[in-house]
Amino acid sequence: EAQVTQNPRYLITVTGKKLTVTCSQNMNHEYMSWYRQDPGLGLRQIYYSMNVEVTDKGDVPEGYKVSRKEKRNFPLILESPSPNQTSLYFCASRSGDFDTEAFFGQGTRLTVV
Amino acid sequence: GENVEQHPSTLSVQEGDSAVIKCTYSDSASNYFPWYKQELGKRPQLIIDIRSNVGEKKDQRIAVTLNKTAKHFSLHITETQPEDSAVYFCATGGTGGFKTIFGAGTRLFVKA
Image (cartoon, rainbow over all chains, first blue to last red; front, side, top):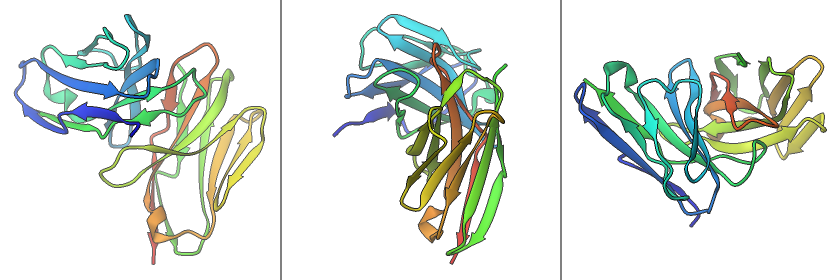
């Protein structure tokens, strides 16, 4: 089954404790992105990747890092999480350029206390 | 910077009525306009999209219209059903960029 898989689904952590949210897709998609969803703000892009070893900042990259060492994986790293990073996070992948459907992961609800 | 404004933020309709959600965008280079539906606790999923060489597209009870001159596009849902209750996001994309910019979302309630 074609899918985007994120882990974990839920995470509660403390300020400053490094964490990684994993994202994996099995559709051989070149393009992958991370979004955060906050009430009243919709989905805001954090980082995106056009291919292996090629990444760029989205609209809200501060406090986040990503890597794309393999085509299927695109982990999101929070080196020193803060309470304002409490949010619902979605990974997404696309097969082609801007005008192709984005397939989303199940979401990761992160709480930083 | 580029942005997408979506209205209304909340919409409540009676089952069987129509629902219309509108979005305006600022980047004239945008030429792809998808709509995503997010049910409670679920991931967003594409329900319909339109490209700038088309003014209207229909798929059963849902339709999208695009006015490139005015930079706005709309989602129309006819004969609404309770299972249409969800959050709907409009978005834009354009050539030369990898960004998809989303609106803030519309929470649609369909009352039985």
